[in-house]
Amino acid sequence: MQEHPAQPHPQTASRSKPQVIIELNRDHVHIAKLMDILEAQLHKIEDIEKPDYVLMLDIMHYMTHYPDMFHHPKEDLVFAKMLERDTAQREAIDHLEQEHKLIYDKGLALREMLESASSEMAMIPRNTVAELGLGYVQLLRSHMSLEESQVFRAAAELLSDADSEEIEKRLESPGDPLFGATVAGVYEVLFKYIKDEAAGA
Image 1 (cartoon, rainbow, N blue to C red):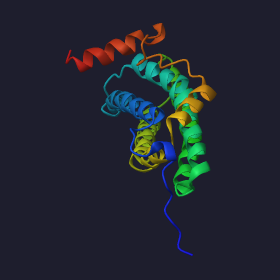
Image 2: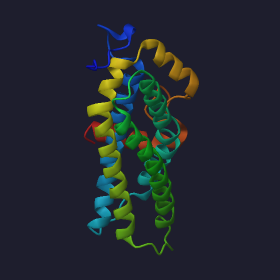
Image 3: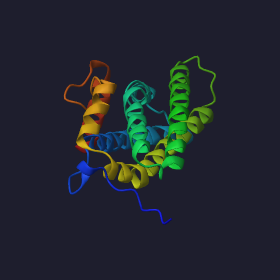
């Protein structure tokens, strides 16, 4: 018997991208910006320059408190909902879910290493910090690339606005503390850096 390709959810025909996918893509833009900043600071370590450890720590504090705690769990809920409708993306989804765990572990390790390296008494080799950090940046970039080029496109066809609302209710995210409507005090310095850089300061 010939198999027919998976059909979009009835509510998704001839409509715009689900809100949850719009929000995840927006998060990716923000994360990509932070990875560019982090990468530039890590290259300073490689070039025997003095990096801004406070800036890098602010980035990793954000990464381990918002993307790891809310963005990636939201993606996992999207993936689960997709698999209820179609299993064509199962291999990619399994890979991405495993990477979420790896990103979490590497993010915590990098944050802890930066905390130690920022101390004047630190004995951590500079190249060790740079190697771990650059590996983390590369992992995030390749991870987001697979999501955007393959899985999110499938999700946009499979999910409905009702699915977006259900996912939001299940996750109960407090909102983005850096790029949201209100910047949390702990990220004010990082936010100013991003704003000044965008303005060419």
